[in-house]
Length: 276
Image (cartoon, rainbow, N blue to C red; front, side):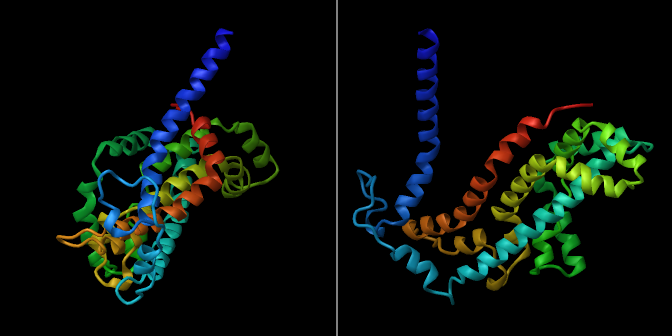
């Protein structure tokens, strides 16, 4: 009986916490379907009445001032390329630190871990100087290449690689498999949960990036969704319904992607242990 009461209490508590976290998402979606005149009304209108699509028409129906589809393409291309590149770089570095033996391996690993405490904003100016020198300003490489190699990805993947029995690799090596073939055909397939977890984290990080994309792009056709949709915010007047419609368009692809890989995301976090 006591256990049943505890389970009911846990369920109710979890439900309340879930509702608290979901309410801002609901409010964003609901506001995007409201008339602008009632977005700031008091008392607030919980359910949009009447429901209108004018906010979405304002964004999508004006391709000259708000080329949303071009912004969406830029964000999708940058985030996808960044994710694939980041997985490739981090996985190779993580495998080298987990399995190869070379001088300074532990020192290099701890230097990478120490870099996690450095605020990312410190790298803005050096990265911009590098991008400008390469002639990548206002081009796709500026949105993709910087930040592709991350200590976070290297650490997550290394910890998972350490949990894979080395006997599997020894058996493949006896059969004549080389180091890269072992990595590609054995280690990576076994690491699918953590690879997808890190891939999702990388995609969301690039998709939602605003500051860096604002710095390295200046032409309207090269803007990403977060930067482009911020142009909907006026200096003195805020169109909250339109802004929330833009936020929905930005969040929807990331939300769909998370729902598709959520079971791998949870599994990847659970299976990533901390080993020396």
